Amino acid sequence: MNFLYAAYTATWIIHITYLVILARRYKRLRSEIEQLKKK
Amino acid sequence: MKRAFPILAVLTAALLSYALYEALVAAPTEQTMGNVQRIFYYHVPSAWTAFLFFFINFVCSIQYLVRRDPVADKVTNWAVIVIAVAACIAPFIIRPLPAGIEPSSVATTGIAIAGLYFLIKKYIPAGKTDALAVASAEVGVVFCTVVLVTGPLWARPVWGIWWTWDVRLTSTLVLWLIYISYLMLRRFSTSTETPALAAALAIFGALDVPLVYFSIWIFRTQHPQPVIGGGGSIDPRMLHVLLINWLAFLCFAALICWSRYRLEILQREVEETQALEALLEPRSSR
Image (cartoon, rainbow over all chains, first blue to last red; front, side, top):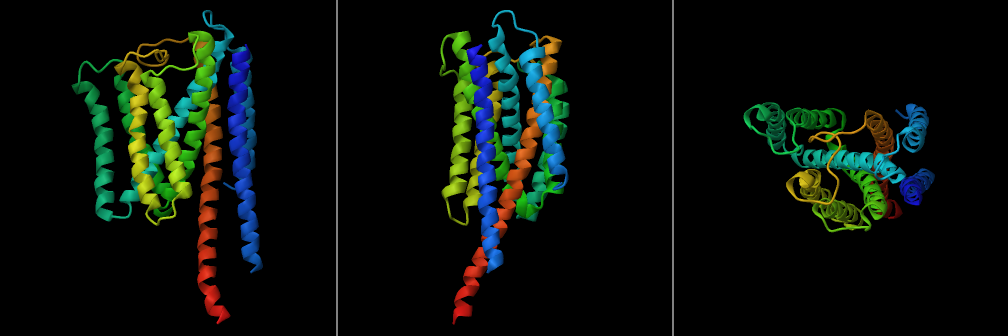
């Protein structure tokens, strides 16, 4: 049972990590766009 | 699509929750392996999703290379049509088919290849196929990572070992490494030829996908035989849970791929604007 929970948890950790990376990239890009707008 | 995104995200989350419930609670317990078999409901759909997104990357890479030249573009269009027709005719000519290959799956694959090729060609502008290639490769790598993590977690209690260097496992690892190198090339190379080089690498990498898929029929491997097609069998309730999970993962992967694609396009537009600004700045300061 431990292996089952480990596999499901690992799957969601991988997906959530990727979503966090995507969100951070969006945030960085948005700040770059704001800087360009200021110029 | 921008307005529909939150609705689709909520629907996908609901579908993923339902699929999780089906996998952990509703699916029957396998008699030999017990509950650890339920890893299969995440492992197999993740593998299929990874293959599909690597295939999208392959198609986009081909289109990036050929759509710059009208002659090459026409030749490729006809080649794709010929492949689709050949896939429908070949199973009636080549008999018997190699083990594990069914006539209907050959025809379906051929038509799906052609359909996906022309679908991408119709809806993705020539200048943006490269952006979709990057997005699909990233999503493919995420799902392939899930496959490589959940596989050993299933193997340890069932085989007694975490990993063995058999063909299916090794070719999957090689596939993952090829696409990691593809993403590293995209990330760290600053050459103007990077998209073309990356497209060539992606085409080379995609050749590993059929090897991974057919390795269990061609070679003697420790990996279990497929439960769908190739003479395999599965309890209908297990098949239902498997397909529900695949649908949920497909929707999830499509959403994150679309987000990544939008991000890539925005990133390129920002980079172009920054480059233009850098060109204009010295003139204005004079």
